[in-house]
Image (cartoon, rainbow, N blue to C red; front, side):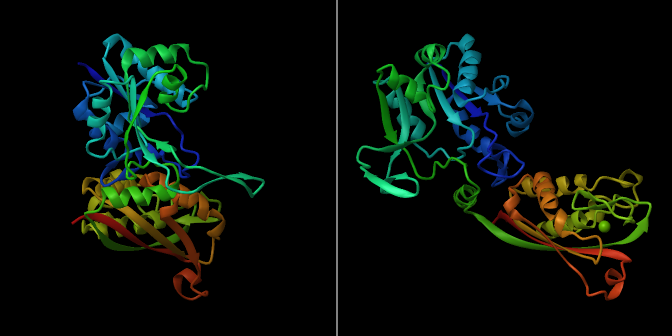
Length: 377
Ligand code: MG
Protein backbone atom coordinates (compact mmCIF):
# COMPACT_ATOMS: atom_id res chain seq x y z
CA UNK A 1 0.00 0.00 0.00
CA UNK A 2 1.42 3.35 -1.06
CA UNK A 3 0.88 6.19 1.40
CA UNK A 4 1.36 9.84 0.46
CA UNK A 5 1.08 13.13 2.30
CA UNK A 6 0.39 16.70 1.25
CA UNK A 7 1.99 19.37 3.40
CA UNK A 8 -0.06 22.53 2.89
CA UNK A 9 2.01 25.67 3.47
CA UNK A 10 0.14 28.12 1.31
CA UNK A 11 -1.08 30.60 3.92
CA UNK A 12 0.37 34.06 4.34
CA UNK A 13 -0.43 34.18 8.05
CA UNK A 14 -2.06 37.62 8.18
CA UNK A 15 -3.58 36.87 11.60
CA UNK A 16 -0.18 35.98 13.03
CA UNK A 17 1.70 39.26 12.57
CA UNK A 18 5.39 39.59 11.79
CA UNK A 19 7.22 39.43 8.49
CA UNK A 20 8.20 35.76 8.66
CA UNK A 21 5.63 33.19 7.54
CA UNK A 22 4.66 31.23 10.63
CA UNK A 23 5.40 27.90 8.96
CA UNK A 24 9.13 28.68 8.84
CA UNK A 25 9.60 30.27 12.26
CA UNK A 26 12.24 28.35 14.18
CA UNK A 27 11.01 26.52 17.26
CA UNK A 28 13.31 24.22 19.21
CA UNK A 29 15.98 24.47 16.54
CA UNK A 30 14.01 23.92 13.36
CA UNK A 31 11.24 25.50 11.28
CA UNK A 32 7.64 24.85 12.32
CA UNK A 33 6.87 23.00 9.08
CA UNK A 34 9.98 20.85 9.47
CA UNK A 35 8.63 19.55 12.77
CA UNK A 36 5.44 18.62 10.90
CA UNK A 37 7.30 17.05 7.98
CA UNK A 38 9.61 15.06 10.26
CA UNK A 39 6.58 13.72 12.14
CA UNK A 40 4.86 12.56 8.94
CA UNK A 41 7.86 11.33 6.94
CA UNK A 42 8.26 7.94 8.69
CA UNK A 43 4.71 6.95 7.66
CA UNK A 44 4.72 7.95 4.00
CA UNK A 45 6.29 6.91 0.72
CA UNK A 46 5.65 10.27 -0.97
CA UNK A 47 5.73 13.74 0.59
CA UNK A 48 4.21 16.52 -1.51
CA UNK A 49 4.81 20.07 -0.21
CA UNK A 50 2.53 22.83 -1.53
CA UNK A 51 3.36 26.53 -1.30
CA UNK A 52 6.20 28.96 -1.99
CA UNK A 53 9.28 26.92 -2.98
CA UNK A 54 11.64 29.72 -1.93
CA UNK A 55 10.32 29.45 1.61
CA UNK A 56 9.58 25.73 1.85
CA UNK A 57 12.72 24.44 0.13
CA UNK A 58 15.22 25.54 2.81
CA UNK A 59 12.88 24.41 5.61
CA UNK A 60 12.75 20.87 4.21
CA UNK A 61 16.44 20.71 3.30
CA UNK A 62 17.75 17.15 3.45
CA UNK A 63 14.30 15.53 3.71
CA UNK A 64 13.19 13.51 0.65
CA UNK A 65 10.12 15.05 -0.98
CA UNK A 66 8.50 15.54 -4.39
CA UNK A 67 9.08 18.84 -6.21
CA UNK A 68 7.26 21.67 -4.42
CA UNK A 69 4.13 22.86 -6.23
CA UNK A 70 2.70 26.39 -5.83
CA UNK A 71 -0.38 26.86 -3.65
CA UNK A 72 -3.66 28.44 -4.72
CA UNK A 73 -5.81 31.33 -3.55
CA UNK A 74 -7.74 29.16 -1.09
CA UNK A 75 -6.68 26.15 0.94
CA UNK A 76 -8.90 23.97 -1.26
CA UNK A 77 -6.93 25.09 -4.35
CA UNK A 78 -3.63 24.27 -2.64
CA UNK A 79 -4.77 20.76 -1.70
CA UNK A 80 -6.08 20.21 -5.22
CA UNK A 81 -2.68 21.23 -6.62
CA UNK A 82 -0.99 18.71 -4.34
CA UNK A 83 -3.41 15.95 -5.32
CA UNK A 84 -2.86 16.56 -9.04
CA UNK A 85 0.91 16.44 -8.52
CA UNK A 86 0.56 13.13 -6.67
CA UNK A 87 -1.87 11.61 -9.20
CA UNK A 88 0.81 10.19 -11.56
CA UNK A 89 2.28 8.27 -8.60
CA UNK A 90 -1.13 6.69 -7.88
CA UNK A 91 -0.89 6.45 -4.09
CA UNK A 92 -3.55 4.45 -2.22
CA UNK A 93 -3.85 6.87 0.70
CA UNK A 94 -3.21 10.57 1.20
CA UNK A 95 -2.72 12.45 4.45
CA UNK A 96 -3.44 16.18 4.18
CA UNK A 97 -1.66 18.24 6.83
CA UNK A 98 -1.34 21.93 7.65
CA UNK A 99 2.31 23.00 7.77
CA UNK A 100 1.45 25.34 10.66
CA UNK A 101 0.70 22.35 12.93
CA UNK A 102 4.15 21.26 14.15
CA UNK A 103 3.01 18.70 16.73
CA UNK A 104 1.42 15.45 15.57
CA UNK A 105 0.99 13.40 18.74
CA UNK A 106 2.22 9.80 18.78
CA UNK A 107 -0.52 7.41 17.71
CA UNK A 108 -2.52 9.90 15.66
CA UNK A 109 -1.41 8.71 12.23
CA UNK A 110 -1.71 5.04 13.24
CA UNK A 111 -5.31 5.66 14.38
CA UNK A 112 -6.16 7.47 11.13
CA UNK A 113 -4.76 4.68 8.96
CA UNK A 114 -6.62 2.07 10.99
CA UNK A 115 -9.90 3.99 10.59
CA UNK A 116 -9.44 4.10 6.81
CA UNK A 117 -9.93 0.35 6.68
CA UNK A 118 -13.63 0.89 7.32
CA UNK A 119 -14.22 4.55 6.32
CA UNK A 120 -13.53 6.70 3.27
CA UNK A 121 -11.85 9.31 5.44
CA UNK A 122 -10.68 9.91 9.00
CA UNK A 123 -9.72 13.03 10.91
CA UNK A 124 -8.36 13.78 14.38
CA UNK A 125 -10.74 15.93 16.41
CA UNK A 126 -11.20 17.09 19.99
CA UNK A 127 -14.55 17.62 21.72
CA UNK A 128 -15.46 21.29 22.27
CA UNK A 129 -15.06 22.00 25.99
CA UNK A 130 -15.95 25.71 26.20
CA UNK A 131 -19.57 26.80 26.46
CA UNK A 132 -20.59 28.16 23.07
CA UNK A 133 -22.53 31.39 22.58
CA UNK A 134 -23.97 32.78 19.42
CA UNK A 135 -23.46 36.56 19.46
CA UNK A 136 -25.18 39.39 17.66
CA UNK A 137 -24.02 43.04 17.90
CA UNK A 138 -22.02 42.26 21.04
CA UNK A 139 -24.96 40.61 22.84
CA UNK A 140 -25.52 36.92 23.45
CA UNK A 141 -28.29 35.73 21.18
CA UNK A 142 -28.31 32.16 22.41
CA UNK A 143 -26.30 29.39 24.05
CA UNK A 144 -25.43 26.70 21.55
CA UNK A 145 -25.30 23.12 22.73
CA UNK A 146 -21.78 21.75 22.49
CA UNK A 147 -23.02 18.20 22.54
CA UNK A 148 -21.63 16.27 19.55
CA UNK A 149 -19.41 19.21 18.55
CA UNK A 150 -15.74 18.69 17.73
CA UNK A 151 -12.83 20.84 16.58
CA UNK A 152 -11.29 19.36 13.43
CA UNK A 153 -7.51 18.99 13.23
CA UNK A 154 -5.04 17.62 10.70
CA UNK A 155 -3.56 15.39 9.34
CA UNK A 156 -6.75 14.20 7.69
CA UNK A 157 -6.55 10.83 5.95
CA UNK A 158 -8.36 9.70 2.82
CA UNK A 159 -8.46 7.10 0.09
CA UNK A 160 -6.47 9.00 -2.52
CA UNK A 161 -8.61 8.32 -5.60
CA UNK A 162 -11.78 9.34 -3.77
CA UNK A 163 -10.40 12.64 -2.51
CA UNK A 164 -8.94 13.50 -5.92
CA UNK A 165 -12.29 12.76 -7.60
CA UNK A 166 -14.19 14.96 -5.13
CA UNK A 167 -11.71 17.83 -5.48
CA UNK A 168 -12.01 17.71 -9.26
CA UNK A 169 -15.80 18.16 -9.12
CA UNK A 170 -15.93 20.51 -6.10
CA UNK A 171 -17.18 24.08 -6.47
CA UNK A 172 -14.75 26.91 -5.72
CA UNK A 173 -14.48 27.51 -1.96
CA UNK A 174 -16.78 24.58 -1.17
CA UNK A 175 -14.73 23.32 1.76
CA UNK A 176 -12.48 24.70 4.50
CA UNK A 177 -11.18 21.19 5.08
CA UNK A 178 -11.07 18.03 3.01
CA UNK A 179 -13.40 16.03 5.20
CA UNK A 180 -16.19 18.45 4.22
CA UNK A 181 -16.01 17.28 0.60
CA UNK A 182 -16.60 13.69 1.70
CA UNK A 183 -19.44 14.76 4.01
CA UNK A 184 -21.12 16.61 1.14
CA UNK A 185 -20.80 13.45 -0.99
CA UNK A 186 -22.44 11.38 1.75
CA UNK A 187 -19.31 9.36 2.55
CA UNK A 188 -18.41 8.38 6.10
CA UNK A 189 -15.53 10.15 7.79
CA UNK A 190 -14.35 8.73 11.09
CA UNK A 191 -13.46 10.89 14.08
CA UNK A 192 -10.33 9.69 15.88
CA UNK A 193 -8.95 11.17 19.09
CA UNK A 194 -7.16 14.44 18.48
CA UNK A 195 -5.03 16.22 21.07
CA UNK A 196 -4.89 19.72 22.51
CA UNK A 197 -1.15 19.87 21.76
CA UNK A 198 -1.84 19.53 18.03
CA UNK A 199 -1.87 23.32 17.86
CA UNK A 200 -2.34 25.25 14.64
CA UNK A 201 -0.12 28.33 14.80
CA UNK A 202 -2.67 31.01 14.06
CA UNK A 203 -2.17 33.79 16.60
CA UNK A 204 1.12 35.03 18.07
CA UNK A 205 0.25 33.64 21.50
CA UNK A 206 0.09 30.12 20.03
CA UNK A 207 3.86 30.33 19.60
CA UNK A 208 4.68 30.20 23.30
CA UNK A 209 2.35 27.23 23.80
CA UNK A 210 4.13 25.33 21.05
CA UNK A 211 7.53 26.39 22.37
CA UNK A 212 6.59 25.11 25.82
CA UNK A 213 5.71 21.70 24.40
CA UNK A 214 8.57 21.31 21.92
CA UNK A 215 11.15 23.17 23.95
CA UNK A 216 10.45 21.67 27.35
CA UNK A 217 14.08 20.73 27.79
CA UNK A 218 15.46 24.19 27.06
CA UNK A 219 17.02 26.44 29.68
CA UNK A 220 17.30 30.24 29.52
CA UNK A 221 20.67 31.87 28.84
CA UNK A 222 21.02 35.62 29.17
CA UNK A 223 23.35 37.70 27.02
CA UNK A 224 24.25 41.38 26.94
CA UNK A 225 25.93 43.52 24.30
CA UNK A 226 27.26 47.06 24.16
CA UNK A 227 28.58 49.07 21.22
CA UNK A 228 29.59 52.64 20.36
CA UNK A 229 30.22 54.33 17.03
CA UNK A 230 31.34 57.90 16.42
CA UNK A 231 29.35 60.29 14.25
CA UNK A 232 30.92 61.22 10.92
CA UNK A 233 29.73 63.44 8.10
CA UNK A 234 29.34 61.90 4.67
CA UNK A 235 28.20 58.50 5.95
CA UNK A 236 24.64 57.06 6.07
CA UNK A 237 22.99 56.76 9.49
CA UNK A 238 22.03 53.08 9.69
CA UNK A 239 20.60 51.82 12.99
CA UNK A 240 18.93 48.44 13.55
CA UNK A 241 18.88 47.87 9.80
CA UNK A 242 17.03 51.11 9.01
CA UNK A 243 18.57 54.08 7.21
CA UNK A 244 17.55 57.27 9.01
CA UNK A 245 17.67 60.64 7.22
CA UNK A 246 20.24 62.66 9.24
CA UNK A 247 23.05 65.14 8.62
CA UNK A 248 25.69 62.64 9.75
CA UNK A 249 26.24 58.91 9.82
CA UNK A 250 28.21 56.51 11.97
CA UNK A 251 31.89 55.82 11.43
CA UNK A 252 33.14 52.27 11.31
CA UNK A 253 34.66 49.49 9.27
CA UNK A 254 31.31 47.92 8.37
CA UNK A 255 28.11 49.93 7.93
CA UNK A 256 28.56 50.79 11.65
CA UNK A 257 25.05 49.69 12.63
CA UNK A 258 25.49 50.20 16.34
CA UNK A 259 22.13 48.59 17.22
CA UNK A 260 22.73 45.37 15.31
CA UNK A 261 26.29 45.13 16.64
CA UNK A 262 25.10 45.34 20.25
CA UNK A 263 22.37 42.78 19.52
CA UNK A 264 24.81 40.36 17.86
CA UNK A 265 27.15 40.61 20.84
CA UNK A 266 24.24 39.89 23.19
CA UNK A 267 23.39 36.74 21.21
CA UNK A 268 27.01 35.59 20.98
CA UNK A 269 27.26 36.29 24.69
CA UNK A 270 24.24 34.12 25.52
CA UNK A 271 25.81 31.32 23.48
CA UNK A 272 29.26 31.96 25.03
CA UNK A 273 30.64 32.16 21.50
CA UNK A 274 32.79 35.26 21.83
CA UNK A 275 31.79 38.49 20.13
CA UNK A 276 31.14 39.99 16.72
CA UNK A 277 34.84 40.78 16.19
CA UNK A 278 35.72 37.10 16.55
CA UNK A 279 33.27 36.01 13.85
CA UNK A 280 33.82 39.01 11.55
CA UNK A 281 37.31 40.44 12.20
CA UNK A 282 37.58 44.18 11.31
CA UNK A 283 41.06 43.37 9.99
CA UNK A 284 39.46 41.56 7.06
CA UNK A 285 38.68 43.77 4.07
CA UNK A 286 35.65 41.57 3.30
CA UNK A 287 33.66 43.30 6.02
CA UNK A 288 34.47 46.86 4.92
CA UNK A 289 31.14 48.75 4.67
CA UNK A 290 29.41 45.36 5.10
CA UNK A 291 25.65 45.31 5.65
CA UNK A 292 25.33 44.34 9.31
CA UNK A 293 22.23 42.32 8.42
CA UNK A 294 24.73 39.61 7.50
CA UNK A 295 26.11 39.60 11.04
CA UNK A 296 22.67 39.28 12.61
CA UNK A 297 21.65 36.47 10.26
CA UNK A 298 24.82 34.67 11.34
CA UNK A 299 24.00 35.14 15.01
CA UNK A 300 20.48 33.77 14.38
CA UNK A 301 21.95 30.80 12.54
CA UNK A 302 24.20 30.09 15.53
CA UNK A 303 21.14 29.95 17.81
CA UNK A 304 19.51 27.47 15.43
CA UNK A 305 22.71 25.43 15.09
CA UNK A 306 22.82 25.03 18.86
CA UNK A 307 19.20 23.79 18.85
CA UNK A 308 18.02 26.94 20.61
CA UNK A 309 15.42 29.64 20.23
CA UNK A 310 15.48 33.36 20.86
CA UNK A 311 13.09 34.10 23.70
CA UNK A 312 13.29 37.89 23.38
CA UNK A 313 15.63 40.80 22.69
CA UNK A 314 15.62 44.33 24.13
CA UNK A 315 17.75 47.07 22.59
CA UNK A 316 18.36 50.54 24.00
CA UNK A 317 19.85 53.24 21.78
CA UNK A 318 21.50 56.18 23.57
CA UNK A 319 21.69 59.50 21.73
CA UNK A 320 20.22 63.02 21.62
CA UNK A 321 19.87 63.01 17.82
CA UNK A 322 18.54 61.60 15.57
CA UNK A 323 15.18 60.89 17.17
CA UNK A 324 14.77 57.12 17.30
CA UNK A 325 11.17 56.61 18.39
CA UNK A 326 9.55 57.36 15.00
CA UNK A 327 11.73 54.65 13.46
CA UNK A 328 11.39 52.06 16.24
CA UNK A 329 8.50 50.11 14.62
CA UNK A 330 10.45 49.71 11.37
CA UNK A 331 13.55 48.71 13.33
CA UNK A 332 11.65 46.05 15.25
CA UNK A 333 10.17 44.70 12.03
CA UNK A 334 13.55 44.55 10.31
CA UNK A 335 15.29 42.85 13.25
CA UNK A 336 12.44 40.32 13.55
CA UNK A 337 12.76 39.56 9.85
CA UNK A 338 16.52 39.02 10.11
CA UNK A 339 16.13 36.85 13.21
CA UNK A 340 13.19 34.91 11.76
CA UNK A 341 11.00 35.54 14.83
CA UNK A 342 7.68 37.32 15.49
CA UNK A 343 7.99 41.06 16.02
CA UNK A 344 6.48 40.69 19.51
CA UNK A 345 9.79 39.25 20.72
CA UNK A 346 11.82 42.31 19.74
CA UNK A 347 11.96 45.62 21.63
CA UNK A 348 13.73 48.75 20.43
CA UNK A 349 13.72 51.83 22.64
CA UNK A 350 15.81 54.96 23.07
CA UNK A 351 17.06 57.31 25.75
CA UNK A 352 19.34 60.31 26.00
CA UNK A 353 22.24 60.89 28.40
CA UNK A 354 20.86 64.30 29.42
CA UNK A 355 23.38 66.08 27.16
CA UNK A 356 26.24 64.58 29.21
CA UNK A 357 29.25 62.77 27.79
CA UNK A 358 29.98 61.86 24.18
CA UNK A 359 26.39 60.83 23.43
CA UNK A 360 25.12 64.03 25.01
CA UNK A 361 27.45 66.13 22.87
CA UNK A 362 26.38 64.28 19.73
CA UNK A 363 29.84 62.86 19.10
CA UNK A 364 28.59 59.30 18.89
CA UNK A 365 25.78 56.85 19.52
CA UNK A 366 25.81 54.02 22.06
CA UNK A 367 23.65 50.92 22.06
CA UNK A 368 23.07 48.18 24.57
CA UNK A 369 21.16 44.96 24.10
CA UNK A 370 19.92 42.13 26.28
CA UNK A 371 18.63 38.80 25.03
CA UNK A 372 17.42 35.54 26.44
CA UNK A 373 18.21 32.51 24.34
CA UNK A 374 16.70 29.14 25.22
CA UNK A 375 19.24 26.35 24.74
CA UNK A 376 19.02 22.59 25.24
CA UNK A 377 19.96 21.71 28.81
MG1 MG B 1 30.35 48.11 16.23
